[in-house]
Structures are given as structure tokens and as C-alpha cells.
Length: 100
Image (cartoon, rainbow, N blue to C red; front, side, top):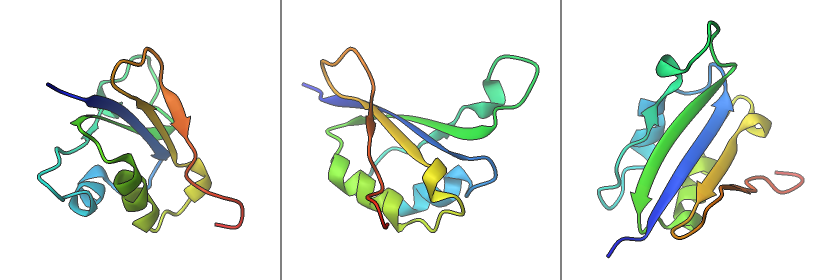
């Protein structure tokens, strides 16, 4: 039986590439994120990086901790959306408390 969590991570354009993030996110054989911006529709480029992943039994707290380890150039532009198993909608996960 699976407990799949779908994840959307967005960052400011020009932030770290997804390979650097995947190196931080390597524990317990976690699958890697994929960058889907190159296949987006329209005649312009996205003005943010969009990374997608689907993870079985995602430890969300550990994942958020990994995101917080990154020295983001524009941390206020980093957003995390998750759709947990048996949920029909994504929800935004707050990453930064005031003063962080």
C-alpha cells in the first residue's frame, strides 16, 4: 500500500538548480525532483522555477528541514505546496516564520 504525497516547490528564477537541491535531499533513497519549466506552455518563460515530485511516505518535516538548509537568494519566493494521500487539493506549507 502506498501513501503518496505530490509536491510542488517553486523558487525565484535563477535560484539554485534542481541538481544541487537533489544532492541535499538524498536520504533513504528519496527520488529526485524534476524541473518542468522547459516543457511549460505559452510563448514566454515562467518567472519562477517549478519543481515537481511524488514521494511515497514523505517525511514532510524532514523535507521542510532540507528546504530550510538551502541558502536561498530570495527565500521569500520559495513556496511549497503538497497534496497528501487521499486529498483532492494542494495546500501551501508555511516555510518561514517571522524573523527567519
